[in-house]
Length: 229
Image 1 (cartoon, helix red, strand yellow):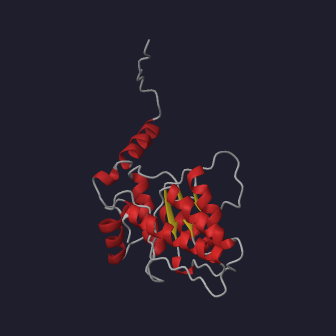
Image 2: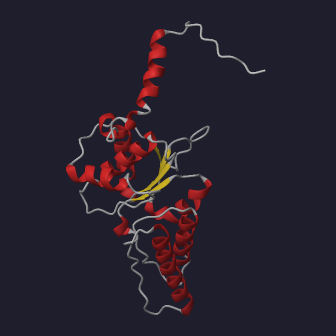
Image 3: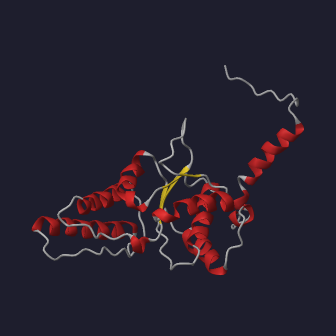
């Protein structure tokens, strides 16, 4: 027998008001397309508004890399996009991969400006982790493997021009990079593929050349599948 809901009006008025207000704000984006600018402690510049609201939000199933020049406001645009997508219930968790020296900066700014809790994976938390993740770019291979298992909804790779393959071609690092790109492709995480791999081919073995060819094929296939040329 279905249990009927009984309303007895005995709850505290302020609590009821808070719940109703939270429900209303949860649909604020329906009335204001730039709702995140009202709930965040920032005043985005014109080019940042255009990037987020004219291009990013209008893209279908966007899994992206912000590859702007230094100082263009990648952190602000990323925060706005994440906040808008969360309010629309289109993403759940996000993994952010900045340079090692900027991990703390990303955590502070996402928390202060957008009320987004960004967790460093090296810090162990008790219980279920519902926060987003920021991870050092030197661990990008590890991050890519974790994308499908931890059900990340979006990947933001910061300072992509610093992602280069300068390792010894006889080492496992180039192979790891190929496996990383494969994991990202399998997890349907796309990004701006104007990514340049700086690989020294001098003295490379045929095996190394095969791995490099594999990397290039993966880049082309991801770009083709997600139409991000």
